[in-house]
Amino acid sequence: MTKLALIIVDLQNDYFQGGKWELEGTEAAAIKARALLMCFRENGLSVVHVRHEFPTTDAPFFVPNSDGAKVHSSVHEIDGEPVVLKHQINSFRDTNLKMVLDDLAVDSVLICGAMSHMCIDAVTRAANDFGYKCTIAHDACATLALEFNGITVPASQVHAAFMAALGFAYARVASTDELLAEINQQ
Image (cartoon, rainbow, N blue to C red; front, side, top):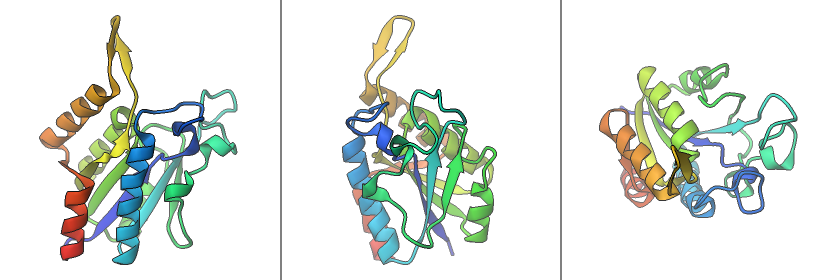
């Protein structure tokens, strides 16, 4: 039988309105992530929070021990839910995330958070490489516009491109509502 864990990645204050690195759609993504979080808690399923801090205080955002580096109140952990602190883009790199997931005896992960084109991409690919069955709640993720070679790519297109790429071979990509319906049917 499949044992599933929710991984909430980097939904931290600096990514929200007024933060040092505001993303597009963070509030909407956090509402969806919170719905998943509440569902997992109500159903007794495992939840793992991942929080990013840069290793130095001259970082552009997620400065160590700052309010901006704290997990946003909408998806904050409760007692008993592990929080993995990372200093890299990939949530598995130089962290205990693999050990936490192994201790929870999970074989499948549902991933949400930020940024779609960085940490969500990296954790999904790494989780897949470790053999976990991966699902991404696409509407519970956020990102920002990017620039390449003089072309500005809107956040919605950045997000769509990464979800399409991950959905091609690394993960199932589904809406929060679809995933909630499936979890509540079990």
